[in-house]
Amino acid sequence: MKINWNYIKGLLLLALVVFLYGFSINKNSRKEVHEIVIEFEEGNNLFMNDQIVNKLLIQNGKTVKNQAKSVIDLHLLEANVLSHPMVEDVAVFLTVDGLLKAKIKQRTPIARVLSNTKSYYIDKQAKVMPLSGNHSARVLLVFGDIKEVDISKIHILATAILEDEFLKKQIISIQKVPNNEFVLNTRVGDQEIFLGKIEDLNHKFKNLQSFFKKTMTDKTIENYTSINLKYSNQVVCTKK
Image (cartoon, rainbow, N blue to C red; front, top):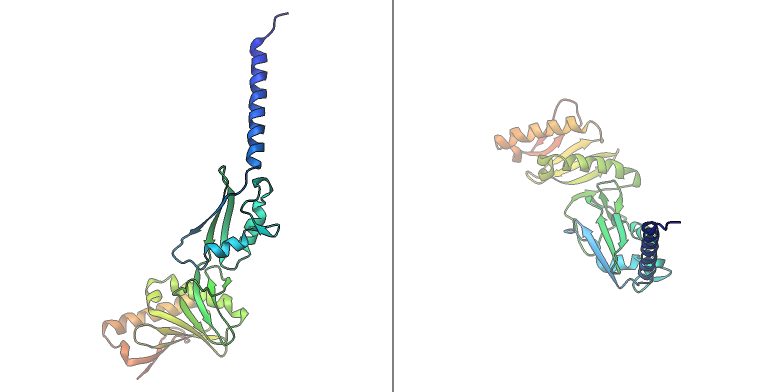
């Protein structure tokens, strides 16, 4: 009987590869996390810092640093970080050399509510964000008796303003007034813009832009104290 040495060599080689792979996996699993690296996406507005995130990277009641890589629950750590109201998204992973990396995307505020009871941000996803001691965002200010039901309305209004290059530069604050109506305050001219309810915004803003274009061209913008957009197909203004 002829022995197929090539077949035997192949089996031995396969067994060696499996052994080395298993040995490598076992050795790697016994390694400990020797350092935590935190990276922030779009990191110019750092509402959080490394210290805050490190307090969230907790497993079994203690930091994951110096724990074995084999016991690290990455899904748990991601859930811990995502529970923070400043965090929009996070990815946590381990590297071969024992680093635990957390890549964090912070929420993006578009308005800051200043009410009688509390102050907070509203982000681009209509989520509530707390204020931060590390950073203060320059966003639209919102005043008045703001309730939870108003958050979606403010989000719609602030988004519409920020998506328009002209209005984004001109409108500096939003005020909620009785009957669930809103008033806008301007940067140039210091007028109050009576918007009314959050409806038909595109039409109202087109009327507003036409008014500003005309009055800024003929330099009469300073002659007015208020601009009323509540009426269809017209802009009603009050002169000084």
